Image (cartoon, rainbow, N blue to C red; front, side):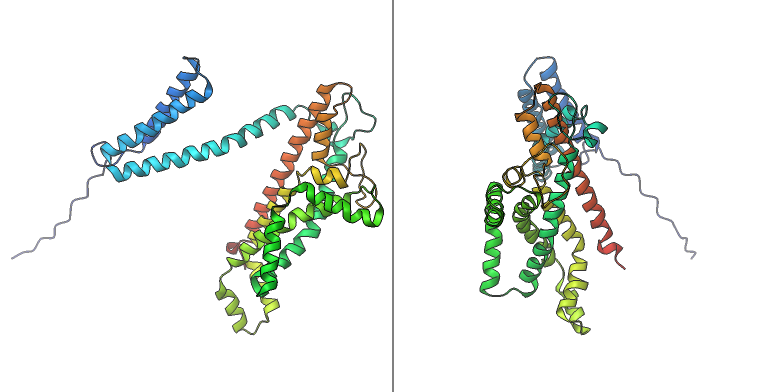
Length: 357
């Protein structure tokens, strides 16, 4: 008897159709496109308002796609499609105000944001011209000083709470950090003003006072973010370091902080972004000026939030020029915050574990 080897036939290519129990990939996007088209027709052709037109398109999407999925894929997939639509709509509603804000600020401020605006101050300017050089420099110096004050205190406080803190003192520090997180910004400004008024008199106005006020707002954010990052460091890394005879303080510096460096950088950037746009504390203790001042310890120092406020509320001889400067200053502040976030991402990528040696 001769045995012959037979090779199995190659499986046929699987095709997805409306009758195979799964929707094809183009079906959900087609439903989304049709729903958007219905909303556009309601807005353009029927001359409805934007909100009813959008609600009509969303309602059609919420009804049509789950019903189609229920017919083709069954009730479980239909529920999954419905929840996916709900999450996507919620995300769109959440990001829509942000996009609207970005578009409004960019469209109103881009025309005035030129080289003259970035390199000149408001000395003697009552109409057109002028710039925000003094406010940009003041914002950067005050925020940098606040970071220099806040980051070491916040990091060391977080290290104490995670690595050393036990008992009543640790619970008291945690409670104080939680309370400080909810302090209104104007209270921080009043605290800094009252503190420096004791030593320099009630009329004191200078940049370092604004930095101290911002640090009061910044420290609890740094503590909370760094604390959460340190808690994510696996205990096995600490135990391995202790097993090699490394003391605890060196383990914290070389292992724990090094492992959490990416998250710490992100948390510090979030804290800086939290305080860089504050107006009330700087209005009280730092004051405002129309000329460039680079000395944090002498004289009033302007900032972008204060410059924006005064440019809009007290525009000068012709209101339109002041409003243009206000929009340009707001756009400049947006750009600085975006640059800080970009730097934080680069630092996070540099210190990530995948790049560690």
